[in-house]
Length: 160
Image (cartoon, rainbow, N blue to C red; front, side, top):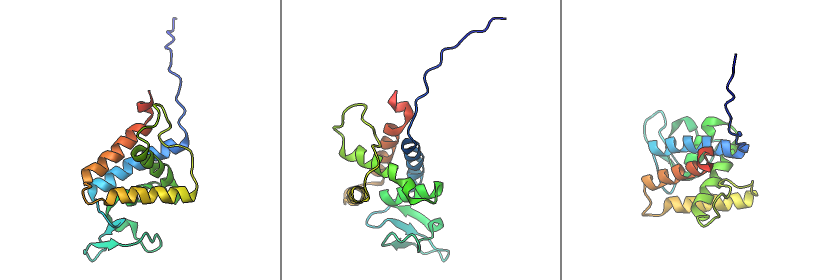
């Protein structure tokens, strides 16, 4: 009995931050494609049926099952929430989106997610992403394209 040995490519080890970023970005795309907004993080539809803007991110008061629209950052948080109750699950996706937007001149092969950053830096990145989302000329298609581009950069397939 003869067996043929098939050479296998080495497995690419992706850090957990990359894996969670990719999962959250996929969920974010779904959230934003369903409904996108500006100048607020969420639009909800309570059981009574009237749409309501959520002026502030108040996790204790927000019924996430009623979210029908979100801005870029709200979409990331909603997408992450669908996968994990831990808010920090969204952080790698926020970092990857920020790096896609603001580090366009980064060297080829640069880490698309980057290392964990301090809360102050992440808050600044959230402000940058929110400002980008809220520009008067921004469109839902542009936001979805940013999420897709970022996911492509994070994907292990794009690293090959």
